[in-house]
Image 1 (cartoon, rainbow, N blue to C red):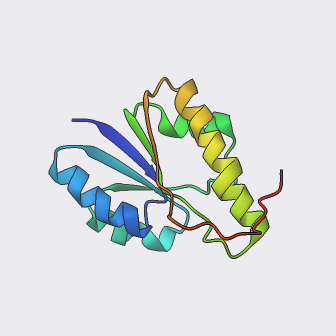
Image 2: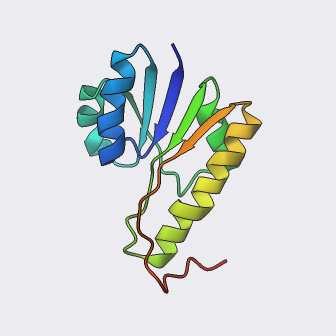
Length: 124
């Protein structure tokens, strides 16, 4: 059994993956931003944790991922706001990678999507 933490725990991928992981004997923690999603995430078999990745630094993320075997990054801002997209899809994602390294986690999975719009600038 592995301990898996999924960021973006209320997203489509996470809500499909969590029950499969749990059915295969894994312990799943799902990080969500919106407390209104706790019951739906819990129904997937995952343990919901409410935390806003836009507000967590590497130290706070390290504390959050500590004790897990696998980090899954499935969080995303949805692309509607370039500043928020950069904050979640780039800054927070990189911080989560640094946190996984700091916590000694050897397995990190990043969920992405197939199409990137041309001309969309994350800045930096």
